[in-house]
Image (cartoon, rainbow, N blue to C red; front, top):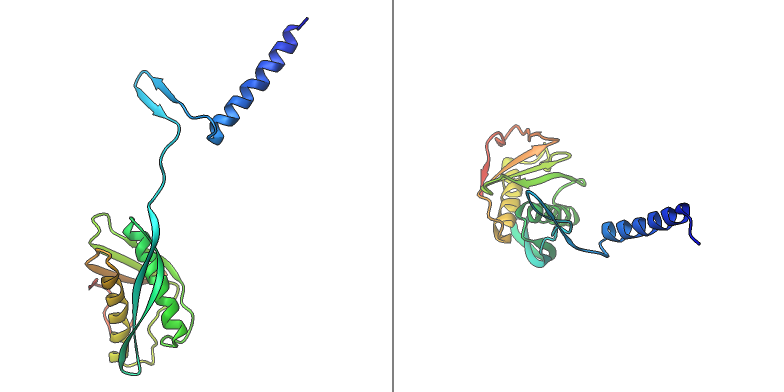
Length: 176
């Protein structure tokens, strides 16, 4: 009735279907190994929601803020990235900075005390006064602090090198 060739082909077909369903997640089971348990399904989920945050900026000698809705999760590095991106958008839309600036890196240290922010170019204009530069730095630090991120100091970089400014020193972290 069935030859060995037919049985081999049908067995291979059904084995392939089972492995496909297993790796696509349709079949979930725990495999016991001599050295412990291996669960094929791992939980990579991060609690993500949204949160209203205040974005601070100086304009016309007044400290202003806009409340924006931001993505928010349980990872402070990701939250820092979203807060800084929102801050960059608000200061650009309100013409506080002259050109569009992109965020390259925003992360926190392992012990969550230091933040590292790297831009594609400086957010400080070379023609601005020391006071206006300081106010711009103050506004990003105030935004980070008010957002609830638990970092205490921030390093500012441009293209992964310390931000270079003739008036303000960015070789050391700025306290929040």
